[in-house]
Image (tube, rainbow, N blue to C red; front, side):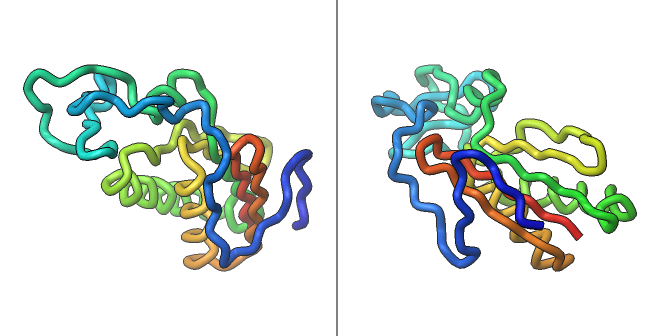
Length: 164
């Protein structure tokens, strides 16, 4: 399957992507505690975004995930295709939604932005690189096939391609 993307390098499957570049969607300052995202209801508390009850007298500010969704500026792209995909589309989409639900339950900033149909595949865009990687790995674990990762360190962007 060896796809190439300009500015992207293939990465090993057993290596975690370490963030060491500037991310426009991370706050330059720590939000005041507590801060509530008015769009999704996530709360910034104890130094991180989490799902919690709405605190009294909370500041309001969009969380980085809602900001990315609003701007339609993904950090992860997952392309899913192949003949197996055509025959098992609904099953694979269900798997993807389950992966998102698990990730989102623990990490409010990891969400799917959009699932778009393409010619013979779908493109799933995510707010974070970790969810994109998780979706690819879960599909590969469950259904085998070919899996590729391409990470662009300058843009903190991950492209994942899975097909079978």
